[in-house]
Length: 341
Image (cartoon, rainbow, N blue to C red):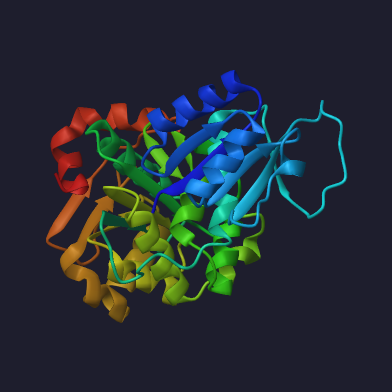
């Protein structure tokens, strides 16, 4: 769905700047029109219905907004405030245009009807999991995502760890994924549009920022997780999911939806013991065995029962995880196996 957006401001240069940027970079999401006079706004509203309108303080008092699904006040703190006849939402005009687009999508998504089929999955989904912590699971997940981005794929990295490590790996810290969890729990709004609005982009990877609180992830049902995964998959070519070490109903649902599962272990006795128990005692492993690639990270030697697909990585240590894909390119034949290329 493309949002029909009207920008109504007497600052024509400003309106053209936003319009040109949206047309160049966000045309897949927004169809934008501009007006710079009250007469122009009134004429535009008689010809077409708009999903969203950004109207500046000089015009909004005189515009009949009843036909606009979401009228928003385009304002700045330098302008004189005034009493509004109704509680309009606000958009700060002096911010990055990408932030304006994100705010429009986020606010409109909450009013939109559910416009996503949770049974429709488009991207290839790679789930990265380990029964033990500290084995480099997130490093492997990010290296997988970076390798796909290097192939000019649209890559979405979804971190579903209870304690997220996203702030350590990405430069941009945007709005929390908690608003997505809230929408999923309430079963209202357009989840895909909300994700488009609040997702960030860094080093070729699209991602959602950490939850506000540990408990926010706990509210999700396995059905919520399916809707979240398929929404992210609908926005990408490749979806890489970084999972918590717990093997619960949510994790099992991701395994079910995944095209491949990277099962990561490290060189400690604890990691080896937990891996062996999972592979020999847990019925979940038997259900996903055909799509599992066993990843022995940090120079680990695997003595547990093996899958048909297995790969070993040396110990690679970087403070900046973005450098990991360059190091792994040195063993590209092995990495191609993990990446499914």
